[in-house]
Image 1 (spheres, rainbow, N blue to C red):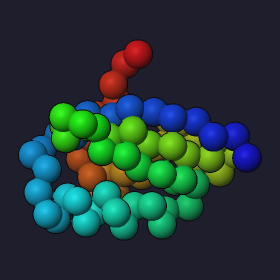
Image 2: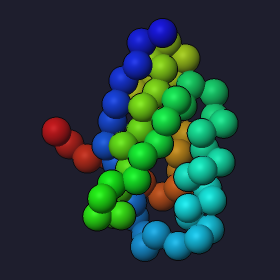
Image 3: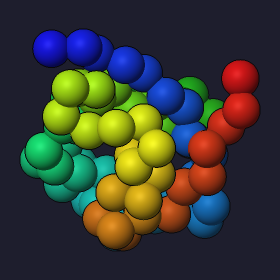
Length: 73
């Protein structure tokens, strides 16, 4: 397993539905953990790079109802 972390900015205000989508996304193949930022405007996603490619993480999250944009380092 190759664990990788990537930050994303939320593209809409956090609400109860979005919180539920974030909680449910932990069941996505390759996603290990999703942590909400202290400012509640972004997430830190830890994923298994042997199962999910970095280039696909953003689209997988968006498909799960989590509107994000990649944060450049």
